[in-house]
Image (cartoon, rainbow, N blue to C red; front, top):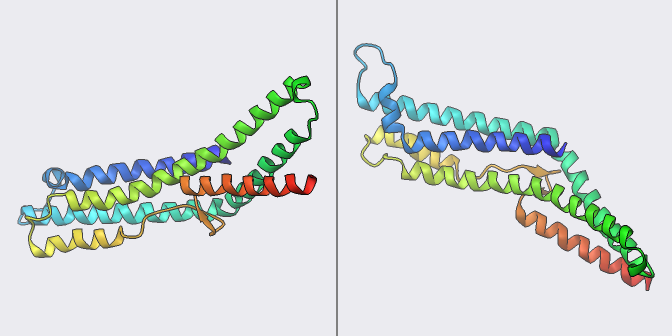
Length: 202
């Protein structure tokens, strides 16, 4: 599930990079658009290109919504289980009376703990990249050569920037966003639970 979700998010990020390129170069790309006779005007080409960018953005939004709908509950369960596993591994480590006499057991526990941390980190990293690409998308629209356009065409860019104010994100169970900030929170939760278990044991 982890690699599939990460791959889907990476696909969305790739589409956003394409859209960012199209936005920053829409004036050049619009020159290649075929238009019927009588409509071979630069402003018309710009409007068509910008409307295609808006439609592309709408498709990306729907795609991310589908990803979240499919994986939201599963990722939330995984986060909770990962926090529990991190705590239990820590408690098990403390339960070893003579750590120096069990080097292999400690090594396997350390490897398992590292794998769990990396597994969750990958999801959070891709989710974080998605959020940052959303912010970059709005900046790309602002950086595009839209100042010199006609007022009616400029409205397309303004509309797009307004839509980009809310960044795209994938949440776990509609509770928290997959991001590096969430990863830090998960580690903190695990440590706090580990500290409570340690105190109860003592």
